[in-house]
Amino acid sequence: MTDIIIIGAGTAGMTAAIYARRAAKTVIVFEGMSYGGQIINTPEIENYPAIAGISGFDYATKLFEQCSALGAEIRFEKVTALEDKGAVKAVTTPNGTYEAKAVIIATGSENRKLGVEREDALVGKGISYCATCDGGFYRGKRVAVVGGGNTALEDALYLADIASDVYLIHRRDTFRGEQATVDSLSARENVHFVLCSRVTALVGDPRLEGIEVTDNEGNVQVIQVSGLFVAVGRIPNNREFAQLIPLDEGGYVAAGEDCTTPVPGIFAAGDNRSKAVRQLVTAAADGAVAATQAISYINLGS
Ligand code: NAP
Image (cartoon, rainbow, N blue to C red; front, side):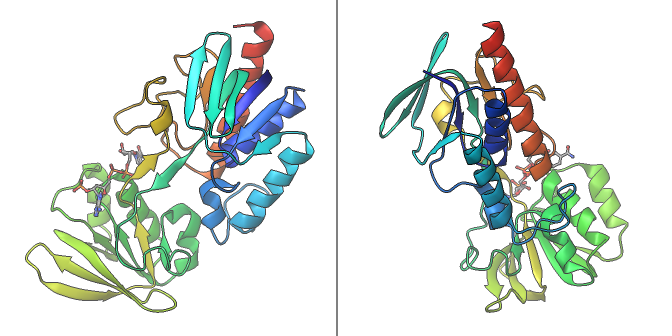
């Protein structure tokens, strides 16, 4: 019987492992892909306190080494099921079933892709899914944001202070995001609304140089931009747990800032949890909170 099983070796999961090991709990971290989570795709992190600059890969590797050195066992097995048996939680992977006193689900979320040709190839070469992470690389340049939710609107506003011009591409003429933010964007001279339109092709090789945009009437234009920020929603990786843990309408675990779920002994940490700010630093914070809660749950026996 392991004390704490952590599902997901991203920032939240590996931070939880550090806290759990420092409290002398036995820990297995299950990871279905490679360690690090989505940060591994970020070329340069510049917003993590006390680290002025580090690549996502180097950051994730240091975190992996830190939690391994503390004695967390990291197994590259994809969790396919989680069962609550009261005091015992059963975690199943293709290699078998493991039991734990507490489980932390830290499976993160995936960016919804636009689905345009060469989108994956241009990530880090003009395409980004995170304006707060990568906006600083586009100082004085022309960028586009695609999407009509709060993320796209707030990304556009954030980028309007950095970039020379921001093109906001949205497939409808009304926004899912807040009107107050739309009003703020309308007041900016360097923000250009391109509505009832979709990005239909990416121009430039090996870096992005422009986007082909097609409106709902079929008219095509090419907009020269060096950055395209895709903000068309996220897909949380919670499918395996939907029967056990309540999810909100977006599919996120409906856990608050204390990372507890309605199931005693099961906690949620990081980007797969309902929250307003999804950043590296908040994922790390969640890992610390969830581990502390799990440690108390085990020590207090409830
Ligand atoms: P979202 O609200 O789901 O919006 C996604 C947007 O992308 C929608 O406008 C959608 O268009 C568009 N879209 C989806 N698929 C597309 C595609 N294939 N091609 C083009 N456009 C596509 O996602 P979000 O903006 O990431 O926000 C997620 C949640 O977090 C929301 O509840 C939001 O309010 C919340 N949030 C809150 C804050 C805050 O409180 N400050 C900040 C950010 C996010 P349609 O509208 O036409 O469907």
